[in-house]
Amino acid sequence: MKALYFAKIDYIKTRTQWYMMLSISVIVIVIMMLNSSSMVGQVNFMYGVFIAIVFSTNPFGACTRKDMGFQQLLPATTFQRVAGRFLFGMFLLLTGIGIGLAGTAVYCVLTGKAEFVSLPMCLLTFAVGVVIITVQYIFFYLVGESKGAQLLSLVRMLPSMCFFFVSMKVIGEIQKNPAEAFALLEKVGGNLDAIGWGGAVMALIVMMAGIVFCTRATAKKDY
Image (tube, rainbow, N blue to C red; front, top):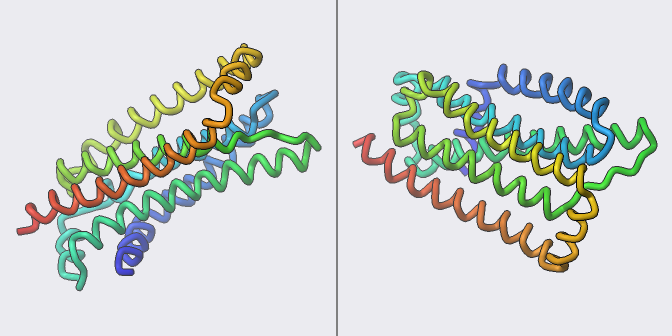
C-alpha cells in the first residue's frame, strides 16, 4: 500500500524526533516507576500515549512547500498521502504504548512485583489518544501543512497536557479512594470490556472519517 511509503517519508523526515522520543520516554518512565507506589502499569501506559500525542504532529512542523510539491509529483492519490500521515501517527502511538508496557515489564522483573494493567482502561486510553491525534491532524490539514510550524507548539502541547493532567487526576483519585473505584467497577460489571473495545472501535472509525475529511479538504487545495 502506497500509504505506507508516505508514512515512511514522514518517519525519515522526523527520525531525529523519534530517537528523542525514545530517550525521553525511557528516562521519564524510569523516574515515574521510582516514584510510583501503585498503578505503575497504568501510569506507564498513559504516559506512552501522552508522549505519542506530543510527537505525532512533528511531520507538519517539518513540512515545507518544496516537500509538498515533491509529494504531489509522486504517483499516488491524495487519499494515500493523507492516509500515510495518519498511519505515521498510529505507528507512533503504538510505539509509545510499547515503551510504556516494556517499562512495566522491566519494573515487574526488577522488583518482583506483579503489576496490574486494566485492559479496558488501556483501550479507553488508546481511544482517547487516537481521537486527539485525529483532531490535531484535521486542524493542520485545514490550516495548511506548510503553515504548521508556527502553530505546532500550541496545538501539540495543549491537547496532550490536558490528556496528561486529566489522566493523572483520575489515577490519583483511584489511588486515594480504591474502595470507591472498585465499587464503581463492580457496578459497571461485565460492561467494562464492552465499553473498552467499543471505545477503541469508535476511535478507529473517527480516524477513518478524519482521513476522508482531510483527503477532501486537501484535494480542494491541490487543484
